[in-house]
Length: 40
Length: 271
Image 1: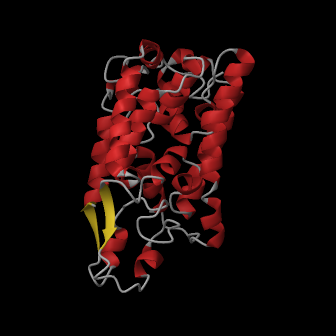
Image 2: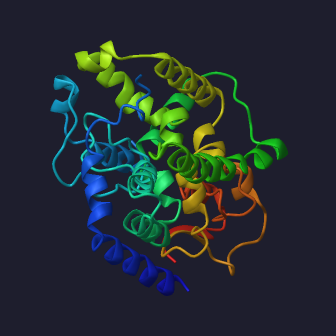
């Protein structure tokens, strides 16, 4: 069971890495997230 | 100093190695910022070298018109199946902060049937603030919002909001009501942490809630040797978390129970 979940996690990571949109969002998220720090 | 404290301190420094960020009032904007760290660590913290998994989950979902954030979900599943809530006990900076606060000598509030029931709250918070509200904001406004980070997360206020308000003039000039609310949430968690063990981890943290599902099947964590165990329940009485048995979803794999087991039935390692 744990190896199945490990495999699924690996596949999800690989699939996510192929999605440029997701990676672009993460890269943009490195700007200060004003909402996250309660500013405004 | 106990081994676990040393690991917690090293982990905190590894997550937040950009120390100059605190002086300059700026955040790290290079890689590996898009890699999630296992514990709760705000990516707006000036020192943060990696991303917060809960923040990243919400940001990715909101920024991709509600696509399933496979990359982040895959990463936290990987962390969970490998380590379960061992991450909470050994690799979370905010867990360390709460433990240090608990060391302040005051009367303490012990666990009870009520606190055990209250542990369910973190699942509700996870579903509502990490999943449903970001989806709602995206559908209603066309732009998502990291609701857990925005309304609740005290780690973000402590690690990011306050240092940036001190060190960054733009941020300082933009402080509004939400900062006051977040500061209040942080104050409540800080005060509660002095009289109660790890209240945020037990009742609020959605990341701990998620990792808890993997606790019994993770590759590493606490394990009980059934041949040595006499079912005396000393481990349960010693444990400051709301466990029903060693290694259940409330167990943070800290290993304190292993120290008190007279029969040597408990250990931490590969399961």
